[in-house]
Image 1 (cartoon, rainbow, N blue to C red):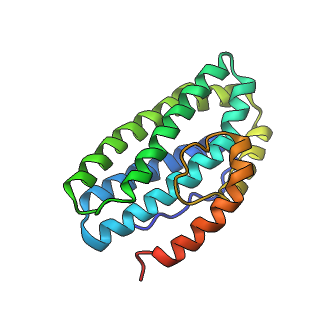
Image 2: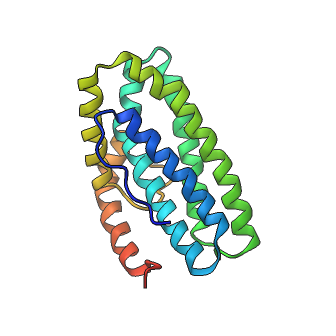
Image 3: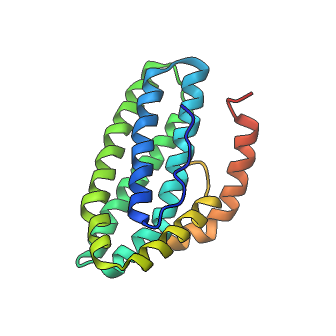
Length: 187
């Protein structure tokens, strides 16, 4: 399965939930495959997770922090989950994709990421949808798409805020995309 990016919608929530569905499907694909096919699927999953989380950290979470009652603790919980996922992804990058350890750790990550997505959808996204206008949601879609276009494609644990992403992100993205070109399992 090749990850086909979710393309334009005027609703940022619909856009992000669509990406959550892609992520769920990619986890299943990684677990169902072996060898080069598993490596390719993991490459796509890692890339989508990295750009998706960066966009949320730069666009969605800051807005939710400002707009939602109890936004601060809500977003701090999501950022902690995202940090843990980045640490797990970085560790997975060092493992043989066909090893038992990789399978165990990717299964653990899958459970954590799916729980994280459920928290976002129920506690953050739907509340944002209720508090923002259609025009604001559309502008946020544009901002998310722009953030994803220049986002790092690999996990960078410790870079979970808008400021950190804007400071480190462009350099990390440039290096990640060069590494991706060299390491791509498409060869």
